[in-house]
Image (cartoon, rainbow, N blue to C red; front, side):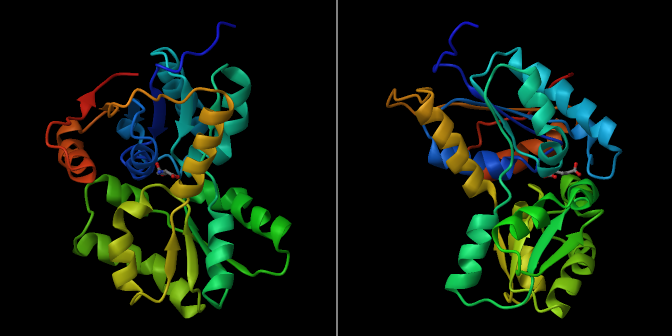
Length: 272
Ligand code: DGL
């Protein structure tokens, strides 16, 4: 295998706009890196699909990005990560980072801020059914109670562009209400779409819940690979961001411009 070149971009992907919440953290943490992002919006949502389908969709996106080529792949999607990370890591030579679970940050906040109640996990059907977050919590802290909250339609609602409206509020309310009733005071946003609407989730819960975005832990894992494999760019220039989607580029462009505060960015329509 030829050595991976540090000048190559980092590939980041999700089933839609959710992974932009991760890309936003990565561009802040690694400003000199170039990024190419793929949101497979044509296949969104993936979280309610059978495992084989989720795996197939993730593999197709990864193949596209590896062919660019990229020096590192970040799976900016919890669902793809719980279902396909192991298979993709075996299949491709480039290093692959899946979504961290945010558990270390969540447990630290719980202890430091003396926040009570069970630890909440909000995620898609496939992620919740894997119980990987809960198992990871229990392997570290067997006595911490966990409340898994499956948010079946939330990612699709966000993907359709409902980022701050009545439809989002009524959809999200159904999922955060049980957390409030169970006295949850720390909850992990276990789907990358949810941090995009964190302010609405906080409003719906009267700021009683501290929502943890696992993108920060994921970014630490990316940094660890860049530095240990000598792959980080240090050119002194600000890197580029290229956002590609498989549908609804017009809808995604203003969201991208708003997140990255850059009106020159445009989502490009691609076919995988
Ligand atoms: N953003 C994805 C995640 O983190 C899921 C969205 C979907 O269901 O497609 O799980």
